[in-house]
Image (cartoon, rainbow, N blue to C red; front, side, top):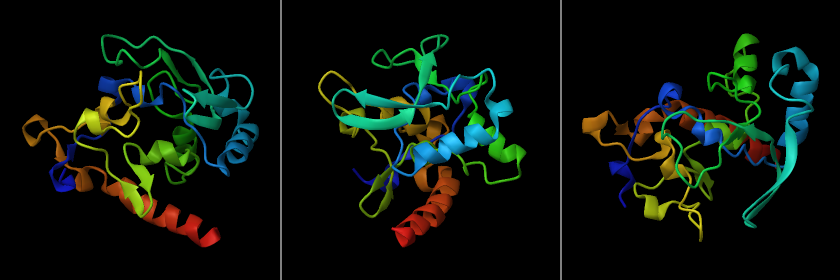
Length: 193
């Protein structure tokens, strides 16, 4: 596949209902304590969303294990949710589909992704060996496809190829903010490690 041909559309919560958050987010080693500290420092912001600190231990189909954001049952409307996705959603997801971690950062005048897990703000990209990699164009090339699970990224609205005729733009145009932020954050992480 020529990645230059990949076209994406920006996130539209009215369409996707934050279905990318259906299973929560698996966290990188430095993130569980950071999230717990944010929740502890701002309990009023997270009141009504969940009890506790929002972080749990998880296992996904025997492939991924570790700390992740907790989930709660959620009824998605219409047929937006792929059949192989669970009817759950990350506990940090507000009723309108926005991320409570992002709304807190914005309310504090910080970068919108200052508190969000990296996998969340980087979506639909994945951190590859040389930096962020765009999603594949075809579902059969989805990196999360395993036996009994059709895939993840290419089943989310912002991760699926959308032709220019349907409003898609080249991926590097659609996701220029994510790429700029990734360059800053991932470079800082590499320097610290």
